[in-house]
Length: 433
Ligand code: 5AD
Ligand code: SF4
Image (cartoon, protein in one colour):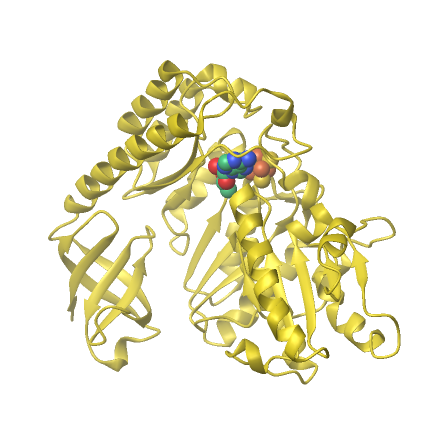
């Protein structure tokens, strides 16, 4: 199983793995040994699709050696390209969109006697609530942290974005199922859950909203920490800020995609807020939530973006001082509203702007991290440091990565760490008693 893209895709892959394991399949780290190869794909930018297509042609080698190998493409690119994919690559066995991914075990059963190619990306006749029904805990990299989806799809139609087309309309998971999944995770030794949805702030189920869900997850489960992504600025309510500020289990980190600092571009992007609205929201968050950290997504080179528009984005980055940011060059996505605009910012200019933005953010991240020297934080240690095998890696509630010295005992624990060094991306610290 190889996964491209967002946390929702990682979660889908982990759940699919778990489902396949429960049916008697086993995982191999060596693709040459695999009987089934699944590539879970992303369509959000062209580059992600190009990489997935490259990977699929690599996998063809295994199929040539052993024609019995099943080659399965799932996720957003499977949904977007459907039959075109099997047209391009007739050796593919199955193409399943994000809503059909969990039907793979059933298809594997059928494929024993039927023809192999199943292109299934139609949402018709599909009972969307069925996807949640099976209690499948994701098969994860570490047992101490997990994702849990609270919704699927998106209704926002930001003009650049393919997600509403490939992942379909927003559907909310029944609240009791989410709470039950969190409790099952806690019982299995998981310390932290990240609630995921394209826009968690618009969650609604039988009169309950996202703030109510945080309250229920806090009160009714034994999980230690609760994170959530992504928050659309237009839907982040005062009630939710209040919950984050007051519920001890809720992590004080908000991923709040700004996308652009220019009001003209924000309007063209269909984001439904202005830079002033955004600044007011940030002010309120900073006032109310102690030690909060903010991260964001930015797109540079959106159609018609001038140097001045880009300067507005730089201004916003300086004003807000995000702790971290994901920054992208605009990529035309067929079928979206923005695909009808002329992609008029030259590639070189997009790259230049991206470079400036990344440089600025790196400085800001470092400055913010250096302010934390001497402070102590709770850190959930979830794996060994890759660079230094004597050290451990974890995260603070504010989503900062921390490297700490210690023995094996710290793994899977929430420990107290005093910070004594920092760079743009990482804090370094020592264990406190
Ligand atoms: N081009 C570049 N970046 C995009 N994103 C979404 N669509 C595009 C696109 N067409 C970015 C947005 C979003 C993040 C997940 O990906 O910033 O928040
Ligand atoms: Fe895409 Fe906008 Fe939905 Fe995010 S909120 S998934 S950017 S359409």
